[in-house]
Image: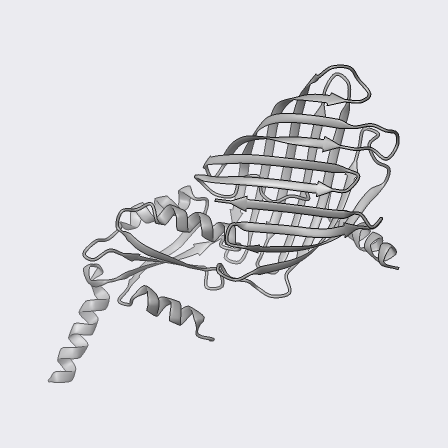
Length: 219
Length: 108
């Protein structure tokens, strides 16, 4: 019952969105540092740190571990990356952003020998008010040994409009697809997101009952 | 006569930036705590800044300056633009930042 409900809701999210994101903005604010870690049981783990000298650029790096449900296939990628805010739409009660990024890294895996030069490209589009949130992200990693993409859509709703010093609460539905023979189908998750000040935590469960957790700190 | 004197003094206090204690800015794009965090950090970088209050609900950024100091409008607008936000208006109010906080907390 719970699983089928999540699947139906995620199907709706995919129809609304394109491909998308499960993470927050890659650039929080000018002269700010963002540290983020994400854990998806059986699928992926990622940690990132970025420094933004301006509100439209951040530089940093990260580590990405990917698992597969098809065969015993894993990827471990360490990368440096630049994030660029292509455009921001500021409205009286809303904000929209379009980010792109690119990077280089070193990848190892259990289905190829040695390490490979990893190339990364991605984008994120998001729109939020104090009550509604939507984002779409696509993140491509490729090398001479593989090419795969993680696409994520998130739709969120806040039960109340928070202010700066309040605890913000969001209920988020996420749909994620992995290409490149990593996972079959679409992974859907229901998440609860809490943030206050510069701290953000998001936790939930996928339709197969696996936990998913993300934490982010801006300072 | 006394009423005229109070009225004249009040009008002078409102009209003169030199007597203002709080600078208020109406800002577009203020929707999340991270927005407010970035703006607060930027404005605290001015030597003249005493304190900053941000209201997402009112789309308002208020800055209290240190005694006898002011921050030019152009500098404020540039700072918020460089932080990624659009300033619609800047106005100075003859009230303390605590007054602003109380006003923001008061239900409409």
